[in-house]
Length: 164
Ligand SMILES: *[C@@H]1O[C@H](CO)[C@@H](O)[C@H](O)[C@H]1NC(C)=O
Image (cartoon, rainbow, N blue to C red; front, side):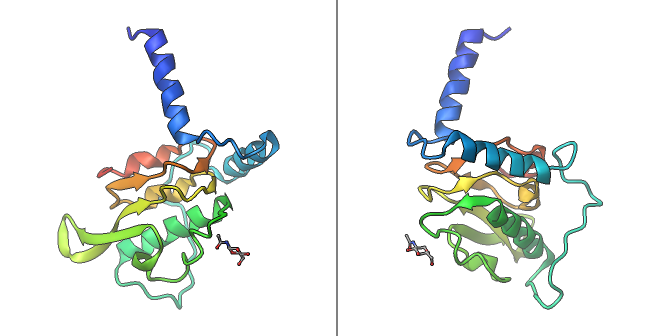
């Protein structure tokens, strides 16, 4: 059995690193963001294989994995409540590798296929929640989120990011 005091302390430290000390969001704003997340969350908080995502058919992607990443990143952008530094301002269109903070690399299982390998939002001061579609960023091996104001829960779908 783990020491409960140690657990509480660990939880406290994790929360501190997830929520910055500036606490710029009011309680009302936090409640609003959490409500938005809960409204968008499937019942089990996970992505199911039969979930349908609509993407403009006129948008052409280099490969299907970049298309999945596009859906995930667009959902993430939509889940942003405040982006004071306009960090996600260029998160538009099919060239996800050009998005600020998004890094592409050859896929580990197929070096000829380019995939989104990392998302680095450090110091972006973004307020919002993590959408369930984060699970579509299946090729990601790193996410940096410190110095942001994300609230709500971490969706179950994050377990789909096997390289993280
Ligand atoms: C972000 O964009 C808004 C609207 O275009 C602008 O008013 C604001 O100055 C920008 N902020 C920064 C930090 O660039």
